[in-house]
Length: 116
Length: 115
Image (cartoon, rainbow over all chains, first blue to last red; front, side, top):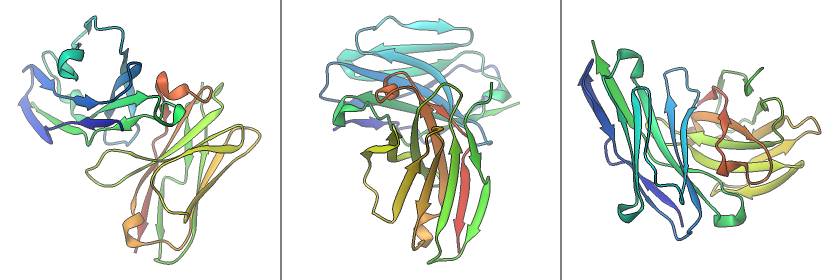
């Protein structure tokens, strides 16, 4: 069975600080996909990034970067020079072939509060 | 290009009543998945509809049912509402039966309050 753990319930930082959100996953599949979504107060989950299990190359996109390590089953997300607009709940999700349909399983989310 | 549209945005129902929530997927998407998100929790998968059939179902009772129409829009029905059904109900669309591997497009949700 697939499982996603986000141990950090809430993180509070001051604007311009760097912040890393942790995600640990469990799956028996060798082919799987990992995601990060952002949920602002409006409620809509906004897709940020997708990684497949065969692509461990880490990526930087503007102020966002991701660190995927299969050896530790982790897929961490870092925001550099945080801004107030980054305040939201961030969800890590995992899709594997359980049931054959790659239905994403979400973690419980990490609430990020960026103070001015 | 419209994304996923859900209606209504907010709803208050009395325990024991029935409710219907509606979802129109993103243009070009043919698969609709429904999630329940309780306060402070991550989204929990309810079921997925593809080709007008329920393809996958999460750990939810039969009080939760759904439908997909030929235009790919979908409804979520909940019967005999319980206080514990109070949550944000999210609709997500994707393309194909394995669209979850590529990420979903989510709507803003319907906030259901059962009193």
